[in-house]
Image 1 (cartoon, rainbow, N blue to C red):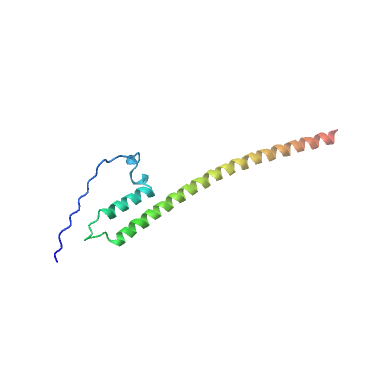
Image 2 (cartoon, rainbow, N blue to C red):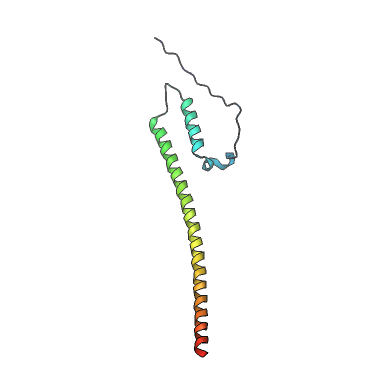
Length: 113
């Protein structure tokens, strides 16, 4: 039984560019990563497949990046909420001091009358 050589050729037809082209790697999302991964698996040489450790490392890196982006979004939301709460606290302090002044004026007017 003889084994013939397998040659893989890949061509790109009807290539389109997306709005993410100028964003670099930071513009990639989960969908883009899955497309790259499936394309890599479809075009690999069956006699010399991709090393599983490399693939797992890529998946782990992408998962870590995704988690970091989620944390960044959460921290941004927390910061915005903190700013809102700070603004509310300032307004409440102003209101409290105004009420205290009005009560003091009312008390003074009651004692003089």
